Image (cartoon, rainbow, N blue to C red):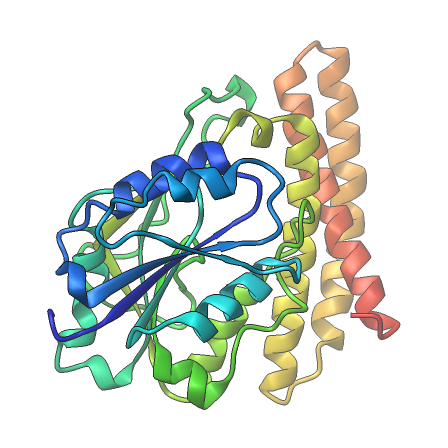
Length: 314
């Protein structure tokens, strides 16, 4: 394991409160200090992100802050890959908490006999709520647990972007993240990590899951409001449509059948969930009403993206 050089990159945008905690965990890794580096890709933050990074100047290794002025998560990821000196590139969110053995666990599969066929390794992502969670949202955020031991995932499962490791050669051979996808500022449209993993699988590489490489994903109070939940539901639905359409097209199949079926179902769900929300409000069941509104707005996201795709705008 010590022969592998690793670059850990944190992509951040105006999250200094959580970034400080993330870096505090990452710099405590039980991994040879001369075999890894830590990058912080600052995507135009206007808070005290620079000062937070500077406060870790005595860490070994100390984080290196890189300003990426092109706004967007995938611009940040690609900048990290360009700057990386490691054989492996670990891409993580700026709001995770990790244990000292996290990095060693995450990159261990790349030292195994299966390393030549691994395109990406992901670890468990467990949501935590530092500001508490409203009653109406309890149960809506679940841990992403796929298997109890390290190994490849089936085609219908994929690790998520909060906790991923890639061999750098995969980007050299098969290209970088698609900068038309994923978050830009406050926009919650996504799909860059899913698209990259799908591309690697299409050339015969495997996506692995390592449960021991667990991170705690902090979900702050401002991300647990009705407004944020509506926006996230809408944009995540758009992302799913885009990802499914791309998958069909890349496999040589037409997306028209999928779009027609999803549009019909979406229209039915919008009407049904709006009626349910109104009934719950009348019955003073505000939590149930909010959940119904979120589901209605998610269906609106499906309809919106299908209509854009149909007219050739996405």
